[in-house]
Amino acid sequence: MKLVPISSADRARTGARLTVPVLAFGGILMAITQTVVVPLLPDLPRLTGSSPGAVSWLVTATLLAGAVLTPVLGRAGDMYGKRRVLLAALGLMTVGSTLCALTSDIRLLIAARALQGAAAAVVPLSISILRDELPPERTGSAVALMSSTVGIGAALGLPLAALIVQYADWHAMFWATSALGAIGLALAWWTVRESPVRSPGRFDTWGALGLAVGLVCLLLAVSQGGQWGWGSAPVLGLFAGSVVTLTVWSRQQLRSKQPLVDLRLAAGRRVALPHVAALLAGFAFYANSLVTAQLVQAPVASGYGLGLSIVATGLCLLPNGVIMLVLSPVSARVSTAYGARVTLAIGAAVIALGYVVRIVDSRHLWVIILGAAVVSVGTTFAYSALPTLILRAVPLAQTASANGVNVLMRTIGQSVCSAAVAAVLVRHTTLLDGVHVPTLSGYRLAFAMAGAVALVACAAALAIPSDPAPQGSERAAGQPGPTQETALEGKKVTP
Image (cartoon, rainbow, N blue to C red):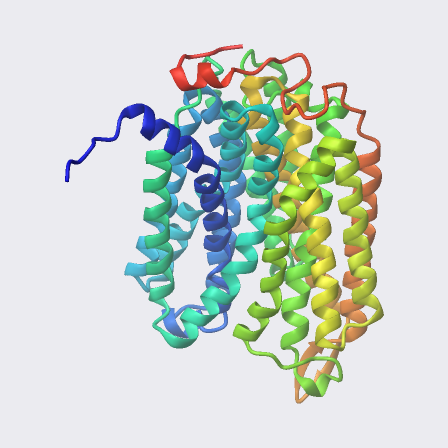
């Protein structure tokens, strides 16, 4: 039997076919990495010999690092190569997982979780790569799938982590994510080609530092306000520091010839309104999993709770990920036929409808799963439309940075949602066996709040100007993209 060597052309074609699934795997892995620690939080103080406040930083550190690094790495990808920065983000995530698997020291765990936060940039970088590499007729469905991986991974991460924690040592969870990260990194290195589109210039270091300080102050105040007290000096000081820092940063960005974030472009309705909608959609989406997980685990004696285990709770949320995976190509077809702004508006309206179902009945498991599924349907449409709107509104050389900002707005929305839901539930509690538990009216108020935010997102979507670009094209209006042949040849293209 004679072995025939694989030519470089055959390998390139194979890599091109695998680009979309490999990038989607990276996005799902990013979301899994962010959520796997949640089932561990109640037991980690005992396992690590630390306080509950210290353990909460395992979530906060990832959130802060991801929020800061997403726009920064997006801009770096536009300038120095999206594939190169993508591999770096996946590498940092894998290293962080390995460090978590090797230690029980809470300080090292927090630092390692911060490294994992770099993976938040995977989605905007991947969306930009897909725009550069794929022909227009394939871009819409690929971008919709990539944007939906955030919800798919979150739905898969909780039951996966719960199963591992229940039947194995808790370090095994991080060994699993380390192995998956190494596989994702290897696949990305083999299949993803470097984008020929670059934005030459000098990286705005001062802009990156200013944005980092401003975002850390803002998100730290939002995430810790419930524990430290919203009127406490540290929280008020952080909010004031955020306002001052971001104001100075904005002026610096407007004066810079090569800013980290093009604020003039971002101020236009075609970019600003999708960013606003992303913040609102992030808020509305996050309440679904956050509140559902608490409600179904509430004790039966509360009169509404189902007393489910963590594993059973994860399985209740699992259909949401399947829905987002199946419906992402459908949402892309709707955007092609009617425009991404219509898809976004439909998605936000469906999210609100899902919360109406949750308000009407949150006592029966099948209704809870149905309501959560309806919210997931709306989230799929909304999340798939957002990057398409951004891609059509920004120049080709700014796609990664602009989508990085859009993902950042979703993150801020989720952080605000977490704080808002916690504030609502704390104010609506009842005493049960000596323990304060949220009331059903508190959960319903949280659902009503999320539904109202979704309706505001719908209004913001309808206010976005209609896109003059031809239907079916994912290129920005007036910004011709590189042809597939140019991408295959590896030529450097600068707009």
